[in-house]
Length: 338
Ligand code: PHE
Image (cartoon, rainbow, N blue to C red; front, side):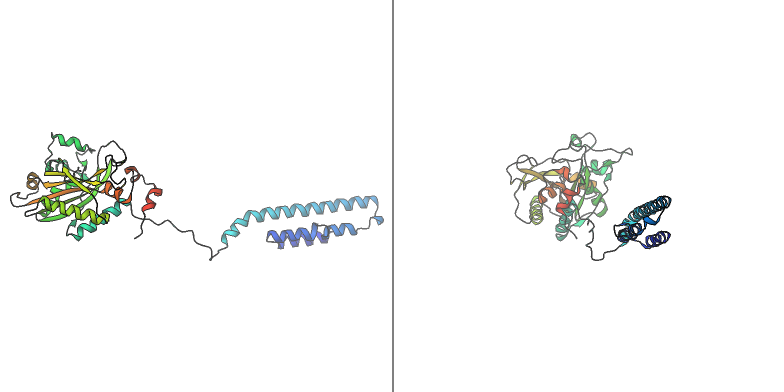
């Protein structure tokens, strides 16, 4: 019996997998295993009752020892099994595939607009989002007590600077710096204290444009707007021009786009079938003067494309709130990879 025990211990030590352990169990404890066979081979007729009892006891001890040792070995192996599996490297398994970043729909619309304008000889310039009251309002013919200030309620910082309410803040900055003649656009983020709905957000994007030269007229303005929109939408679009009031242009217009989401029938995004897309006009002489330009010598036009609205029209996005949400399920639908 001692010999069987020794053999068992040796076999157990050699078994390093669950399959090998099972084999040890079969070899020693199954019906044909050596412990069972040994117990059957004992000749009880030659034993005294004392000896029989002793034999039975030692046999049980051996069985118990074998069973418990096997169980323990099995538990130990199972605990370390997952680690073994991880180490195994299958080079043929398909990879996990990372998520690839892409441009935001507004950025895509901006880049496209920049491209089209650059093709027409415009420079692309960027101004600060935190602005002075002077460039955002005063230089644009909107003094402190002017009622037009109400149209653009804004966020005031503690240092008397503001978050710009429109990219028009770049007009006088640029005229002061570069003088005339000039052709430039200024895309960027603007902020207003707005009540939010499907087409209004407190954070949105505009693309301002400015042309100052000799003998610039409304005809030039309309021609440029038409060309730009047909290039951006890659088809003929319906627009309408109606008078609009902005203190920094004279005359001033609202250029509306026939809603591409509902085909002009009227929907929750546009209301009556038209989207106010490009407010514009001829630059007010007072603004030119603030920029150090003589209005008798030069004239010009300015426009402010609603970049966020343009992106909504272009990509069929019905609610402005989707754009700032950071919800990848929305953004991924417009992803193109560069
Ligand atoms: N800055 C104006 C706005 O945000 C739009 C505008 C730009 C109007 C240029 C006329 C000329 O409402």
